[in-house]
Length: 407
Image: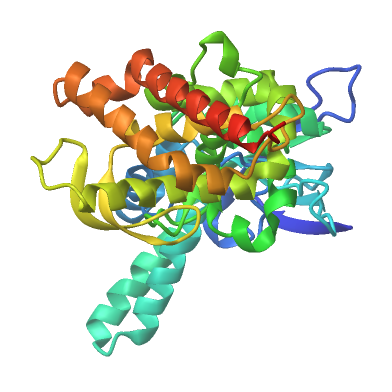
């Protein structure tokens, strides 16, 4: 459906930059904060606004300390609309698309989300403080500051005729002060919709699909990049088990995996239905390492710290905080259990329970002998991944041989 927003403006400039595209209009207006709607959507924005960030705090300080100069000191707000209308140069009417489901993106703020959210926050805080103050002098002072903020001018630019596929490029180009992360742009392109569909809304409440999407609470929330990394560990399309190729980048440059998620999507797609299995296998591997550590009486090892830790995917509690250098090579070795169609050749949980201790001993032996107590060396060295993979291959072969019927 469509909604209309009327904004009284102090000044506006309106043009059609390209004659062949009359639907693509560009309007720039300068409006009082008091006249700015407080319910504009942030859907077109690649990331969510973090009103507690350093950038947001600086915006708030500018607005509160120099409201009369806000329009000069702040880049303003950019937004999309389906159409615009200017009446007498003093009133702008925005025609905004508001979808009834998640298949489309609503018109709204595409850049300047921090500015928009901070404006609303500062205004609310001053209104509440002025209303609650019992001191008449203080209340008068707060009302004066509130009036100054309400009368501050903010620059708003509106673009029309923008296609959905253009949103990510525009958002990337416009967000130059603090670059938007790649996974936020991919979310804007709907590239994570298959994951959302597979895991469902309840699980997705804990996943940040773009920056500032969820509050960062260790063990209770995580970024979608972690799921991409997890699928990369099992991705035989990128790291064929039998060709001595190992997913070392999952440790050394996990952030770059989001590029492969987009460019080589066909290698990830078959793994999406396995996500819940992969999440459980990761956390069970972590717990098995903790159990192994509890049984050890030797010297402590760097990268293994006695500390209660809630695991990201299952919410289970572990007694140690482990470097990913210990966890990831073990998890990656389990990809031998996936066949060419990414179906399990054997029960991965039974295999992990039976073979896990041997895999851990292989990894720890490599660490002690080759890495000189440096977890980082363990994670970035292909040799550690190769050693664990070879051990997993041998144990799987033994299982297959034992399962064959005798003559």
